[in-house]
Picture (cartoon, rainbow, N blue to C red):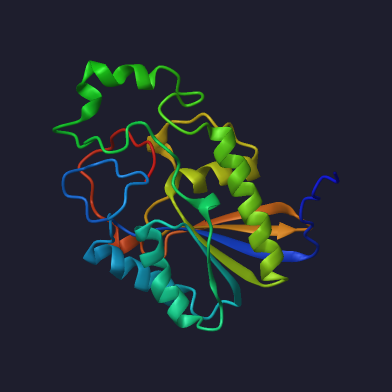
Length: 225
């Protein structure tokens, strides 16, 4: 049996990784891949802002995580590019997480419970969820497919904080092990990869909806979002 060949990209493309907007989550649940977590009113305003920001871009390909918050972030962008089909791609979904469903807000954090400490024993893997290397491999493949589909133009992938950060670490040669509170990937931020002949040669970062970001009283443990 012949082994399937990996897709080959020739030429230049720009692939924008767009993190979804703010989610309605007043109790501070780590929602992970749980269903029925939707954008807040502010999150929808963020999505509209990003759609406006990218309205004049030469976008030839749209790709999206299957989770509601990502699909809702994609909606206004897709409306401005009606001739571009949205591809739903499981490879750009949020990372799996054994802390999913637990409350991680500062006042009622499940991290105060000794029963959860075992999950935090090895941050290099990490022990609480999907291995960083696995996230890198699926995101690398999705970015390459988007670059091929863009065919010399631009693509947008709506994904989640940790997968986007892992893709950036991979592209820039950073260590995958990191402090989750120090990721540069705010809500509706754009992490843009310039891809030439299948290789990312440049990474740009922008926050077009920075003025809409919620004000946080303090930073806390983040395992994804």
